[in-house]
Amino acid sequence: MFRRVFLTAILAGLLSGAVLSVVQEFTTTPLILFAEQFEDQVSIAKDGVQLAHGQVPVHPHDETGRAAWAPEDGIERMSFTALTNIIFGVGFALLLVGLFALHGGPKSGREGTVWGVVGFTVFALAPALGLPAELPGSTAAALEARQVWWFFAAGGAGVGVALMVFARNWWMPVVGIVALALPHLVGAPHPEAYVSGPLPAELAGQFAASSLVVQAIFWAVMGWTAGKVWSRMDDATETA
Amino acid sequence: MMKRTTVRAQAIKLEHAGAAVATRALPAALAAILLGAFMVIGVGFAHSNVVHNAAHDGRHALNFPCH
Image (cartoon, rainbow over all chains, first blue to last red; front, side, top):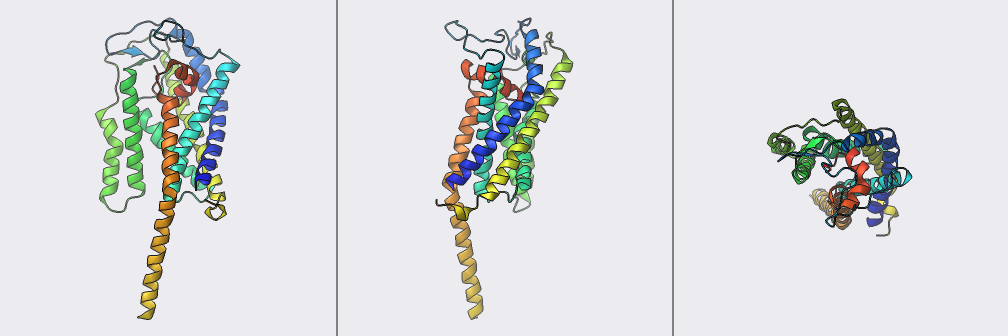
C-alpha cells in the first residue's frame, strides 16, 4: 500500500508541477514580473494596511540587515519556481492519494479528474472567494491573518465537500454546507483602507483570473495522472 | 435455515475483509496526508525569506497569501 500511495503521488506531483511551471511562464509569471516594476515605486504602509511585499520590495532583508538570498531573474528564478512547483505538486498529490487510500480511490484517469476538480474547489476556489490571488504590490491585510483565513477557508471547504459527497443521513450535507460557508460568513481579513498604489487594477484582475485558470490546469493534470496510476497499480500486484 | 446462516456468515466475512482493507490502508494514508501537509505548508507558508524568495512565483500563482 505504501508503494502504491507514494508512487502515485510522486508521479502525479511531478507531472502536475512540471505542467504548472510551463503554463505559469506564459500566464502568471509575466504579470508578476511586470508588477514588480511598480513595486519599487511603492512604500506606503499604514496601521492595519500593508502592501503585498510592502516596503521591502523584491529582495527582503533578514534581521542582520543583509539582503536575503533570492534567485537571479532568468533561468535561475525559473528553475527554483519549477522546483518549488513540483514540491507543491507532490505535497498536494500526497493529500489527494492519501484520501484515495482511505476511500478506495478512482477506477480510471477520468474518475481521478473528478477528484482533481474537488481539490481545485477546496484549495483554489474556496480561498479565492475571500482572498483573490494578489500581485506583488497590492494592498492587503497582515500576512498572518490572511494565512490563517486561507487555512480556515480550505479546511472548511474540504470538510464541507466530504460531508456532502459521503453523506449517510440528512444532517451531514447540512453540516457540510455550514462548514463550507462559515469562513466566508466570518469574512476574509481585508485592509482597513485600500491604498491605491501605482499598480493598475486591470492587471490585478487579470492576475486573479489567470491564477484560477493555472490552478484548474494543475489540479486537472494531477487528478487525471493520480487516477490513471492508482487504478493501474492493483493491490494484488503488491507485496506489502 | 442452513442457507440463511451461510449467507450471514459470508456477509460477516465480507465485512471483516472490508475493515481489513481500510485498516491496512490507514498507515500509508496517514503518512501520505501528514507528509503532504508538511510539504505544502513548508513551501506555501514558511516565513523564511529564502523559502519565500525561492517559491515566490509559485506562491503567487497558486494564491498562497504572500507578503
